[in-house]
Length: 432
Image (cartoon, rainbow, N blue to C red):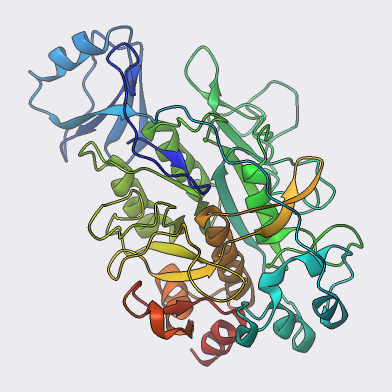
């Protein structure tokens, strides 16, 4: 699976023969139901990912594949595909402050007025101000995993909303909770592995994309600094799986999903994707697994190629998993962003994604892309789940889709035909 960050540019990915687009030392192996994982003579190690799907580390991929081809217990193998390295999008211009929004804001965060999506549905927003001006945030906490470039967990607007692994003692170099990860206090880093192939614990963002996504979802509200996130009682689990060059792999993505689900995340935000699938289904099977076993909703960006992804498929957006919610991007005047993908079958709804102001390492700035529309929807989903924690992941998805602000020109562009709206979603959830 070749993956590329969804920030404005979403190009076809190619590779040269001398620079393979897959890991040369890892292979995904699925064992047939009822069979045990064989001992491979060409393996360094074999690790269970989920169900009966394993990742096998090797010094010789070709020898391992040849060996496996003669083993009847194997259902399939997949190479660990990655993306062609590319420059990620840069920070955008900072939006001009809107004093009308500032006066009506229920938040004391000084830069919140720059987030235009907080406006009412009538003004092309998602009714954040309407909700918080008229209702109190309540109750249970929702853990959201951000599978991305990592998170700046020391940021002034994020340090208080970071998920903390209570079983782990920070920076002691020990796997205190025996979950296979050392010092995974706020999440894991699948890009930095130890000598045994285990992901490490420091998921600090060195790019900015994951930090921006996280701020949109849950930057601390009413702390008198910076901005406010959409969700009021959320904990952000940071998982660094997207390199700054954008060439993350299938194994890393799958491991991120499983880690998030096992550690209590009920929503996973995925602002990345690929324009071509090599035929593998392990990522889709992982999404299916965490839905059925852990009740996780996976929210993904539709992509930025201005194309119909019913015809030109994009992954994971074009997978058919029931627990997958695919998001297109809208701009300040209400229409689809010029870059946004669409599809009457494969795109579920839309959300603001153009010129979105949020946190970045050391400060704040704006970015554009379906990468920003996805966390906008994730923030809404997290707030709905926080107030109505008994909703199942599939009920939550249906609530979001059934309560969009309908836009006539979207009727042929996506399943719901509209833009997500927190106020309407809460009203529907309350009636269930």
